[in-house]
Image (cartoon, rainbow, N blue to C red; front, side, top):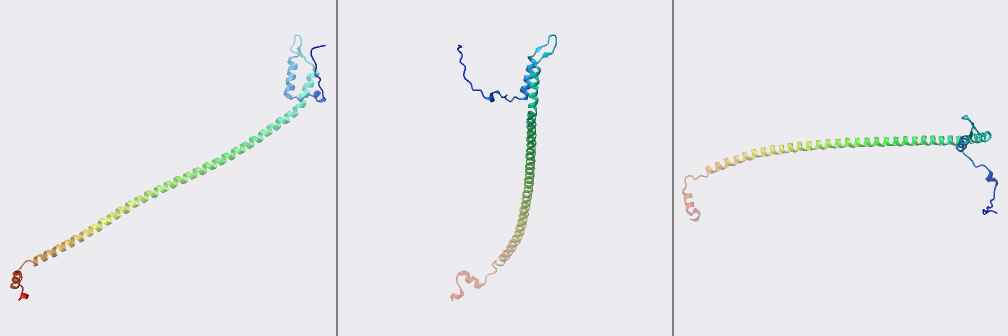
Length: 189
């Protein structure tokens, strides 16, 4: 006998059932069948087993509707996915545009507020300088007026002192004054 030992296999009915083959694989088998077929002498034609080729083409045609349904389903799913993606993209764009518009509006409000605040500050500083100058002018006028009054008052005081000094000059001395100057008083007698 031979050196090769055969293993016992259990064969079931499923082993004889054809494995599902895709349309593409069936068409590739048809191509191989035609490619490997014997050519006719002095011709470009080949000899092909008609039954085998028709069986492969029938199997391909039978499998074609299933694959077409599957392809159509994939295309439909793709279209739905793209539609949803476009819808989501549109929503995102709308939200982004709204956010951008709000931010621009907020920045515009901030810019206007800053401009208004700067205008108010500039106007307040101008008013403060004007009030300060007016206050300084008022104080200067009052001090000048006070200086005039003080100068008149000093002149009046000087005139009064001058009059007093003219009257206080010694006139002729009377005997009573002479006695008073000598340290002898009438009251002492």
